[in-house]
Length: 227
Image (cartoon, rainbow, N blue to C red; front, side, top):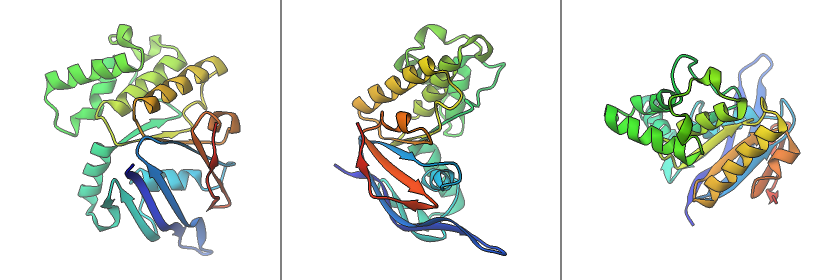
């Protein structure tokens, strides 16, 4: 099975004074179809790792290959294009436009890929059906529950059929029932072949992944079995 993520000695530090090492050089491999949780306390380096994996930041040291592409050799615009085509993001805060319908919010993820309007509409509806919201395509976020809003965010992340789905504390703003429903949806997506990396500080949430990687003080430990 091919690797979607391959980190070799990847680290991130920031100039001082004093200099700060947010992520010590680390190796990580995530194969296509895996569901990996990265867990650790606040300030452990989870966000730094997420930004690197999502091509939102560049490492100070090491090599990051995304689906076989050496991201360190890319120009900024090529990195942005690769991020738009290959990576879907799900954030804790949903980040939905309140005066746009669920369908319109999902369509926004396709605008920068220059997808024609009718094709955007069809793909957005298919993505909403995939997360169980085919009956709420015209609903505004203000009329949706927290769990439904997060599922709209998941649909938006999926609409471009990414190689990698990055989830940043996706259950952090949800009650336990809604969080469970979103995690079940992630499990189904993984069963359908999607590759997921989920950042979480909650060990119970991390346990829903197939594999768990722990981070503390900017250091990744060896992966341990998930559930």
